[in-house]
Amino acid sequence: MNYSAIQLAVFIERRNRFVASCCLIETGEVIVTHVKNTGRSKELLVANALVAVNHQPSLKRKTAYDLIAVKKGESWINIDSQIPNALAAEGILAGQIQLPKLKGQITYLKREFTFEHSKFDIYFETDQQEKGFVEIKGMTLENQGIGAFPDAPTLRGLKHVEELRLAQKIGYHCYVLFIVQFLHIQVATIHRNMQPALYDAIKMAETDGVQVLAYNCEVDQKTISIKGAVPFDLKQKFIDPNH
Image 1 (cartoon, rainbow, N blue to C red):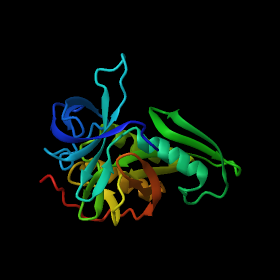
Image 2 (cartoon, rainbow, N blue to C red; image 1 turned 90 degrees about the horizontal axis):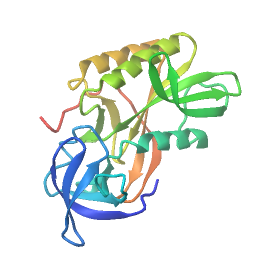
Image 3 (tube, rainbow, N blue to C red; image 1 turned 120 degrees about the vertical axis):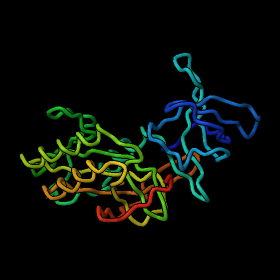
Image 4 (cartoon, helix red, strand yellow; image 1 turned 60 degrees about the vertical axis):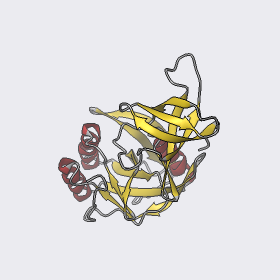
């Protein structure tokens, strides 16, 4: 995924969940930008952080910029919450992302598919009459080489996991896929202290046969692409850098 009009800026403050102030490095202009992630991102969006903003002016928009990525240490972390679904769909179709325990090859893939009371991110079918769902979550929270989800409680995510369990029990092949929106990670896990109910739901889902996967990404200020599979370990301890 390539962004068309990236400019570098210095982060000033987050006014609310959706809006932040930044200062363009090239011109010194203070701009208002849309934050394309409703998570907290407290460890990323700190004063004076180097950020990448995408210039997308339109009469239909309140802001002309999107905040796309943040420099943390020597690495970029993409925080665009719309990117993981597109990366996952392309990666699955290209065979770059492997879905374990499938016997056949995927012949049909549809994004956003309604099942019961949920709209799953991906529905697929294989040439061996297998059917399944993939629910995709972007991961931006990291500490000491450990990636964790979520960085804020998610009722929607919890509901999706519970309904994946139901679908798995009636014969679908079900997956939770974390797209880790940064490169340097040793293991991915659930941020148990942030949302114990989600931890419990994932634990029960794994017991029921739902597969939990994680793939990291190559990221810079202008691009993001799938790198490869990384281990997911529900038992991995995570220390929240914001506490």
